[in-house]
Image (cartoon, rainbow, N blue to C red; front, side, top):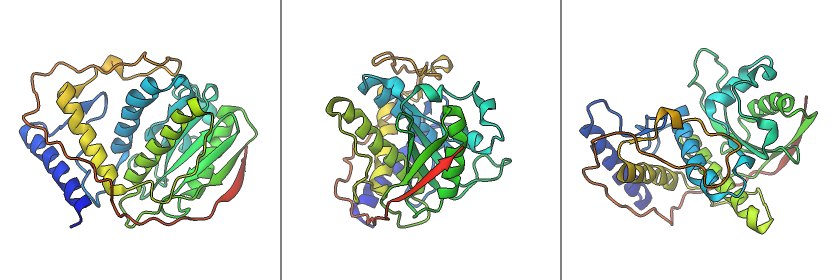
Length: 295
């Protein structure tokens, strides 16, 4: 077992110990998300894992680090699935955020085509849309296996954005080495691209390319496990109330705060484990391809 995998296992072992302490098998309730029992290496991420990470990034990064948080929408997997399956995207205006009033939209793409199985599919990828430039940046850690699904979502999105087309760029993306790391890599790709956008507010420069070794699945699992432990240590096992779940896309920097729910339980122990900075996960690049999606 590599050093990186040992650290991931150690972090997850701590989570399992917390799980055994709790009778209802819930490690952490983070607003409306509460299932984290698949963070070990080689386990496949479901909608809930991505939803948690998007919720966390939105509250800890977008609404605390950005001068214009309204410029970012992290669309949850369930909403992307709804958009992909909807015959008429305009019918979703009442349930989706105001997509045509933001700058960047992050959309996790899944290849599930079964409307009766909301958590189906076998692969995650990421589409980031720049509404100002009418451009989509597509990141796929398994070559372009989900490109058709991304094109379907982009086509539906043009109607909500009231534009005639979106130009899609298939971006060079670090590639996964197994069949289970796509979800955690989409979470880390989201973090990476989001940080680029945050940094560009001050620098004015925005490069949407991802470096070959920028994303490590093992380190991503470590980071997510550590984040959960840190949240438990700071706020207890319940973070946020039901009334806090919705975040307005028009809020400004500093408007969002994290509150812990009423809970008498506290963490028995929290192990602090440093993230592995030298994970040797291999990554290869794929060529940039350009497609145009018309309405």
